[in-house]
Image (cartoon, rainbow, N blue to C red; front, side):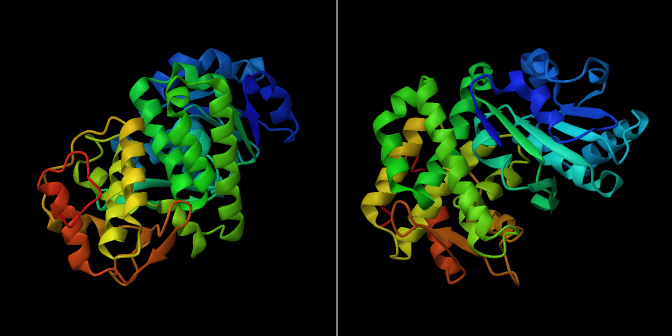
Length: 357
């Protein structure tokens, strides 16, 4: 993995170090390609620049139909087992392109060029790929690590404000589950972060990548410890699913999900009330969250039962005892989950961090 400002200027050289490929096939989206296509293609051999395949990167299009369409594009373009797929885009592009790379001809080489904050700190790292089903998020996928990840900080300059702020949810998550110092840095420097200060972003991205790398190296196939990376995602994925991925950006849903998970920990008397309030305050500073969904607790819990962590229909949640620590628990009474969901449903827009009045 290479990370820094202007990294894409050396893309051709770095890809060349991976070996010789019969073709290079780029997968991206129209809006991403308009913003960074010229920069991205500078790193490709001139005769490969025609092999660019664009698809809609809306979360609602992250499905098997899109996978089939892209595989057919690759076939018509002459991609073979010696081809290289370069995924240029955010989390959806990376997840879909990664699954395509894992599936097409039973696996071809993959390089990630993440263009969003969430992709640079989280989704492009660790080898998880996947697409959604109507029944839930990321239910079909594969563990398929890329050969190379090129993280260029300059790409974040073109990112729309809402998308940038949404991506901060994953940054906050790393502090909440694994690094109290990172969390404190965010509290003290959020102004710089929101201004996209290059030094602040360089520090945050490098630290998040390091944390994820450490977690993944201990549990590559998410059989246990790696589940802490899903802090807030059980609630968040349910919010995305029941709204058919049209109301919330991923980070916005995860932001609400982390607040809900923190409050669940407080309800279970395993989380410190002060830390719950710190987390809630930081999320609201960083992200302009759309209002909580007006939907019954029963409907959201039904959606949660499709979560990947669920075992024998038993809901499992990542809880944080204190800032910088997390664990997975399957000993969560459904009544406690209902209490948290009903708290939001009653209209607590900011989430006071106090379920008991």
